Image 1 (cartoon, helix red, strand yellow):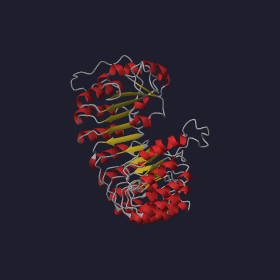
Image 2 (image 1 turned 30 degrees about the vertical axis):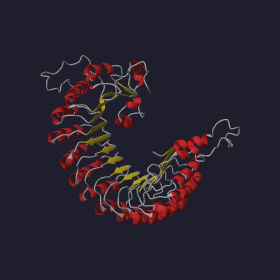
Image 3 (image 1 turned 60 degrees about the vertical axis):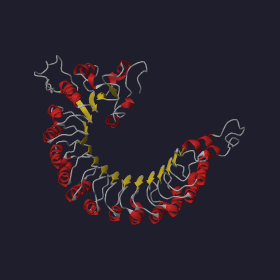
Length: 517
């Protein structure tokens, strides 16, 4: 929804990603402060949530973030309206002012956190019934000096449901105060912290999360948490009976942490997403993590992301020995999968009956591994696949031809990534021949191969019959002259246009989907 062009409002589509994902469109949202009067009057009476944002690039300056403005806007909403606050990319000079406005608005007792205030502000005549339900703070200047008083005040916000604090450095005191605040959020559902917590901060967080039994999503990317911190943290997460999303990218896993994660995964009947990408996971750690799952397979896990780690085909074999009834995404990109790992996975693909996305990119998979995987697809294993990523491997001609024979057996496949695989014109010709049978295919990535101009031209001709394909990427192949694209066959007298009054829409489609530069 957009405000009238005659007003000075912001668009709801410009909401920060944190709130787009968690609030809109699940709930009806209205932006406070600089949003146009027209927009407020249209929907404020029935809004379930209101967002106050101080961020560069959204049409409203942090200078406008005043307590009086917040209270003035909140008076237009019912006391049941949830309030969200987003502060993004603000300098240290502005942080104190903004946090002070938040505290004075939502704390049960009027107070100020500005150092320049020697006495608390007067108590308001009427107490607002609104509770702070969400807080997002990204890329803020300053450190403990600016945020400590704010974290202290947050302990009064017991109705908090969503918290995201990212790219902000806090010290020992800050981690302690943050843990105390989180422990008071009994309704907390989503927690996203990127604060370089370390093991000590993870242990403090673990103690706090014991009280957060409603927690559903936990994201702790780039926190420098190592083995000891992860072990304590996952031991505490057993109390979070509703937890379904755990993202630990860019931390450092060890043996004790791997065992703790595996134990939680085996006994957690509701976990749907686990992301352990960039965690230094090797074969030994993966074996410890997967040990319990061989006896008690995770029945709820839908998305398992393990990209950019250090394991080999041995770990792939252990994954393949487990039945994954609900798994939809398996991301093994940038690991040492090799032909052996791809072959083992292919032989067990029937165990992944719900699999929709399989990523083996940058895994050292060659012709033999691709042939084995293609044979499994031809048998009907993997019929639910919608995305297959084999980019940056070594498929070559034999792998491309084998895969081409398997593509018609994947009726739901919409995205196929084959970039940088030494695929020649002959390999592309084999793929081109079966494209009309791939009714669901939308995106085909063929960047950085050895495709000739003649093969690319043949593909362009085939596109005229593949109206479902919307994007074909042919950049960085063995042709530089693209004038042949303008010379696609004259279809002006085709059955689509018997009188020749205008060009065939298939011809325009073929030109529009190809990306050559």
